[in-house]
Length: 309
Image 1 (cartoon, helix red, strand yellow):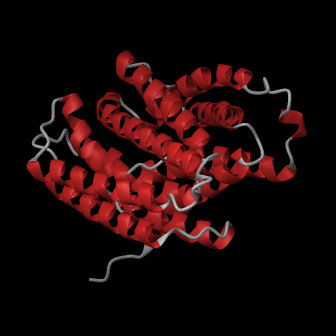
Image 2 (cartoon, rainbow, N blue to C red):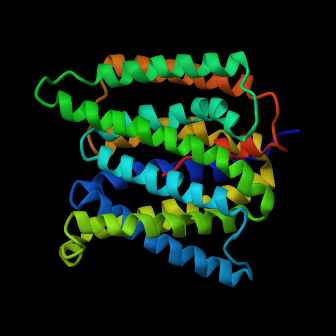
């Protein structure tokens, strides 16, 4: 019996939304202070998620307090602060090759934080993915003048990937206590509260009124489409089609982001970076096949499929 194309269309839409988000973040932080841009995004996303929860008769998650607070601190504050600042220093093609590709391998090993034991295959996958990331970072340092800044940007992106991997594992805890959407709303609100004060270290939001139409369109995209719509659609797809199929987004996002970076921004990754990206995907495949000794009802697989933004 022929499989319906609908799941692939839905998941392809999610991946395209996330890929486009990387482009729009780059457009936004090229014109606006990165921490202000990130904070405005999460304030807006928090309000939208609260509206959605209200319309569906639900409330933001309140338990478990420690995991939710850590998710907001690491997954939203830490990840976005590092990634948004990093993208001011490095091309978005570097981000496409580093962040969404390394997160699954990092997550497979970070699962030890919740009592799961990483297999040798998972650890091997992380090592291979790390070597690939080193090729991506090193292969992009072709301009001796821009080298220090681009290197720092790539390292910030790697730090962001580590943050999101930890957040993914924390999600296996929060998902056991109720709605993933409710947990997402709480983590987003915490992230907004933590990110907002950082904007005062830049221009104190005094420049927000002078942002161009293009900057606001980029802000609108990363707020409405990437931070809210795509995640709501993703969680619906996980419930409808299962976590295994939804995890395909982890492979589609790097390809989509690279294609958009080349077409829209005119970026051209160096040949060695392409090799590094391929090596990372091999590592991801190893890590995904190895998994962990104990999986909590498939939660880890479900949350590994997330890509952020």
